[in-house]
Length: 142
Image (cartoon, rainbow, N blue to C red; front, side, top):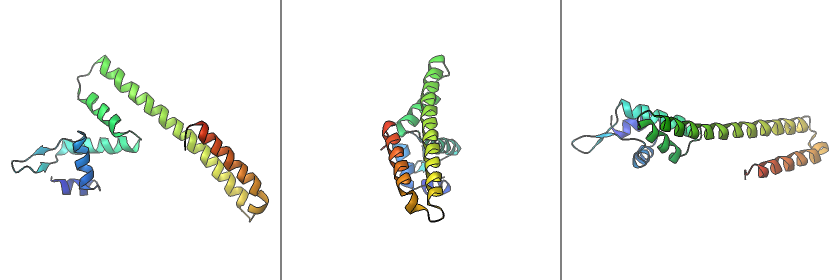
């Protein structure tokens, strides 16, 4: 299929598809007239890219994984892949902890505000926000 149909199928802009191509993430075949032809292999590759991006992988990390995917299976390749995935698992776990903490803070603030109790709980709410801000700074989140 051509780029417009391919982009529409995956609800993306054609420019995004072209960007992935420039980054060597997608490699469509070319027709004699120069038009790109996106086949089933391109679809599988794009699905992988979308999943990896949703999981927080950067373009460079996706490039690395795709390079490793294209290599012959070896102990070195396996080690490189698992190392990259271990780092991403660690990043995701850190984000989960952050969002769990954020959820608790928000729920507590909501409870402190319910029943028109904001005025009497304002100082506690402000302390919660300051404490949350400080925990973000410790984690390097700004």
